Length: 246
Ligand code: FPP
Image (cartoon, rainbow, N blue to C red; front, side):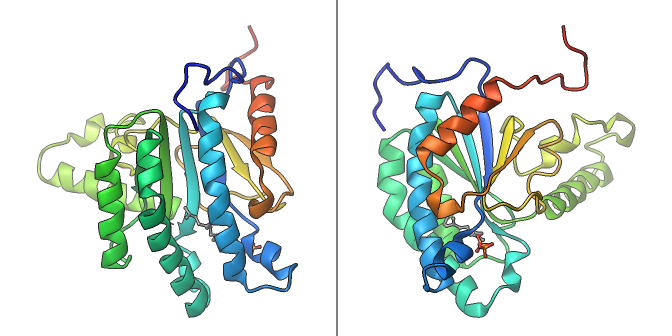
């Protein structure tokens, strides 16, 4: 990724400003090669860098990726531990490059159940990249849309109980201020790889008006070219957002 003025030259008109991705298919990718599932997760982690790097040229300012869901704890202890170790190593290894490339990193999800060392690395990376604004990368880790709405509602109720919020004034603008994503715009385009057509508890509130792309490619095979094709395709869609065509 360069910082030249030529970036966003390939950006389609009316392209998505915020893309969210459910990175699915690492396990199948590895198994089809006779390798353990974690091999697929490592290959998937390598893809993340390429997709982040592709964003400025495509005019994508915000990228949000689903790395670990609140349901993923149900996987084997070996896989969960392997993923947690991968996240720790990924953050430690990628921090310098992300910082240098102008990427601002944020994490969403419930940190309470995460390992303290991992949380410390997450906190540090958020602070270290907080001045960046070339690409806003949000990593969903121990994230679930329902869990997020429940946590938001709890905080909102606490503010009502403390007299800081009038219940009569709670509306569609109020609740999102309590979500983990409160500083982010809503996603315009949600992509899921690996052929599954479901959203699996990802950005439930935020994706109300998003366009969806469910594609067969397994995440470790998701190339910048495939990504560019989906972003360009978005620009050609007729988005009425509940209204009628002008
Ligand atoms: C889903 O594939 C993938 C995950 C649960 C983990 C996602 C993690 C990565 C892409 C790697 C690391 C990311 C970062 C940010 C370092 P799956 O295991 O459910 O695949 P399957 O459906 O084929 O079994």
